[in-house]
Length: 61
Picture 1: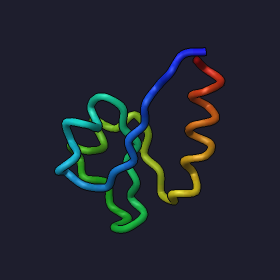
Picture 2: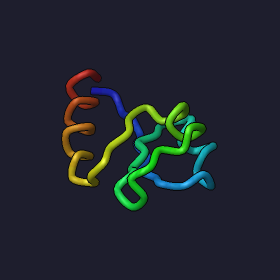
Picture 3: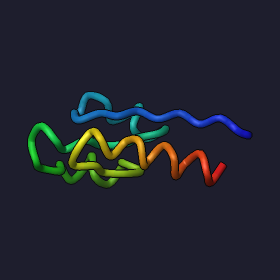
Picture 4: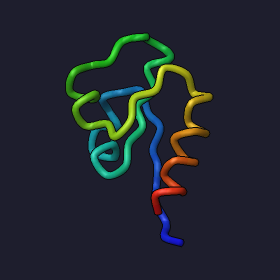
């Protein structure tokens, strides 16, 4: 099984890291900044969704 990395973020300051492996959480603001949404692999509205995102990525690897 391969390895992968995830970064869960909500801010523009994490843009460079998100380009590598990014999950954008819009739970705090409810808004998805255009630049972040374009770079994010996945956008979630609730942090609880991260479990499903990771499970899906594990199954694909």
